[in-house]
Image (spheres, helix red, strand yellow):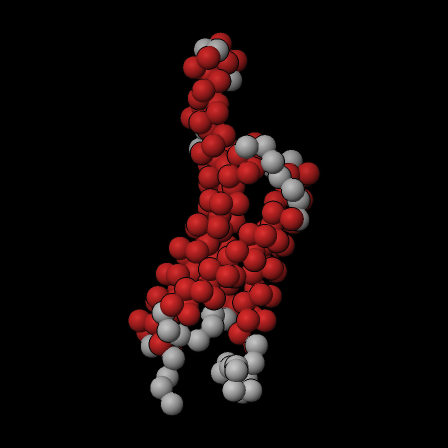
Length: 165
């Protein structure tokens, strides 16, 4: 029996690359409704996790390898959450710059507001309520992605044999 392509160093690198790309895409997609002011706690996170797992399973199938394991889903989830927050930061910064362009007096009362760095922005937004929502969002996305990937991996093959671990 041939070894799966993910057991080779190149195959593992491709799987990591696929996880990073899938996580980045899902992070941007998950941030778009939030940028527009819509955030359905739980529902969006679970949908993003499901989309992430479908992308991972589909990508590995296209690579001709076995289904991904939970570490790939975990990596993709972390990337998705980071990219989601970066996208929201860039969106907030663009909105601040637009507000300052419409009303220059804003900069007078909040100097540097339109040029705030990512970590400063996250600290300024980190209320206890926001941290709770961020944590819930990240956990639901990760649990959904990992669970679906693992369920997919453990699903029986058509011949009745369990898929290899």
